[in-house]
Image (cartoon, rainbow, N blue to C red; front, side, top):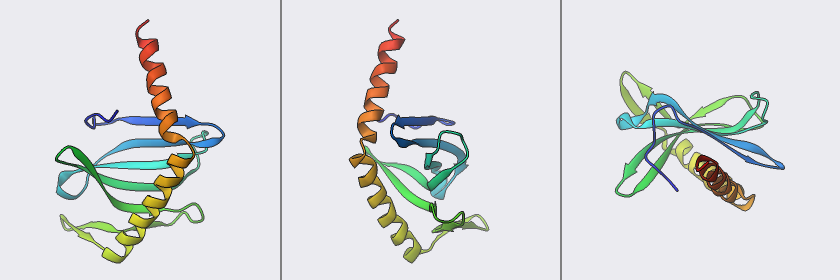
Length: 133
């Protein structure tokens, strides 16, 4: 189901009764020039996007590697950065990066348990059938 990342992409996965999952290209370069993407849960009105994680996405062989750059949790509007660009060089704060990796693993499991993958596949199939006319 995965395809090369197209610049400017945006994906919204609707999965009632849960909030929409929104994944989009920030059109910014991360470490090694990798594209930055945002992954967030949206209330559907375009306002609330919590939690939100920003990742740098790189292809490693046939797999895609997502390295966390920042996290904004539900309970706070503060952004926690685990990677920062300073004077053209990227610095990683390893302790915060480990906490963000753990958060991403737990969140990923929750999204899978709530059926977001199935909702994505179902939506892709429906759009493909509609495109056939």
